[in-house]
Length: 509
Ligand code: GAP
Image (cartoon, rainbow, N blue to C red; front, top):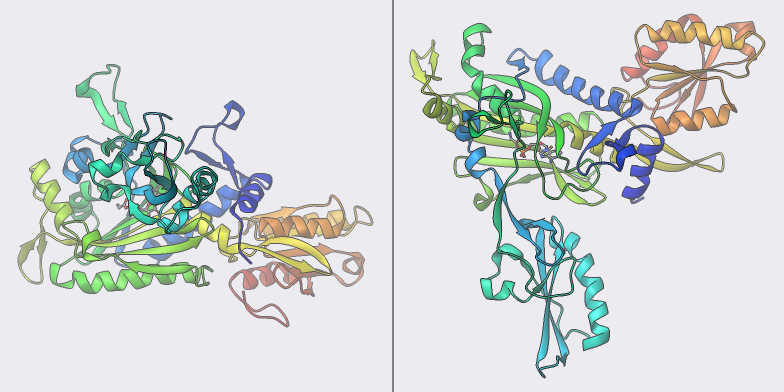
């Protein structure tokens, strides 16, 4: 089944996973809020990342650096000079586009234009790749064909950045019918600017960080001096980053405020290639261990032309979202570029003394850099399932139990005969260790469906048998299988199930 993005977006809104930011004021483009279920899901993802990459390892420590830092950091990192995407403005529509996301479809129409020449109409489309960009031009070509006849050839597809200045003049922009309205690509800085203190002048300018990584490099010496770390070791950070993206789009995928989960792993230069290979695999396996098991998860190694000049290798972990295959996380072998830059700009010695080799070196860095919002979106896409149960269709989010916002829901079958009191006692017991939910309203089938849509792995129902034999019904979200468990063993049974124990008569989740 192909997931339609609209269905997922509407489920996220309806069930309280993700809301448009400031919605009561008409929203604000590129910003999103996580509702009661969404905040649990995203927090579970960040906690799983922290647990698996920091707390469960001997060689990675954590950090929480400030969002606003000395602007010199952004000079050293290259963000102030170079962290800009070439942008193209449309003089007619006043819209602004990322130049690398404009593809030109060079159509030639057979009929004559008013001057009696064949008409070339080069139609610009927007997208991360030519397939994604094709939709607009295809529709417009069909319209133009009514006027000028069917184009003679399938169009040549050319990235806008590769066109000559003369050819750019032939292009009709994505939201206009005129030619030659698109400007030359121009640089546009993506960092949000602010002022520190009362005065708004050039000497008080500061920036909201566009990545968490630089806070790690800036604290490298502090960590080495205080944490008893020895190469190879990593410093990890989870936190907000901000980019004034020109085209925020595809739901939360490209936002202006988002969260990153980054590790800077420091090692000796001669070991960096092995550590790069290690992290490239470890990070891919992390996603599969949490349920991104389908072939929608992919690894793409960058070609030599794509690499930053200092990077020896980079790979992207990509996911085939409904809107196209796009990056979830990048793993980069960055050489000693970052620490060397900060040594140059700060004038501080950030070298490391290797006790074993009795040698002072500038460590090399392998950087696995992930986005918490993109991971959340990928887990939502992967979990979204529509199936049929007992002849009725249902929507179910099949989250890995570690990520599920609610771990179990407890229901009394009916609101009488002592069942609510019994169910509430079980609920209070389970709540000590898990995020559980109590619900006594409506038909039991509807309550199950609501939990299926929230992605709750297990439902526990108190019924009339409970009142005589002190057992409850456990129900598994994915298979809808049901079995009975003694009330006294319910907490333990739930814990075991969440840790992956197989459901009776079924597979482990
Ligand atoms: N320190 C390296 C760095 O920041 P990046 O590829 O620019 O590299 C890393 O960003 C990750 O941050 C991306 O793979 C993505 O998951 C996330 N990310 C970047 N820009 C984003 C945006 N505008 N919205 C949501 N997530 C974003």
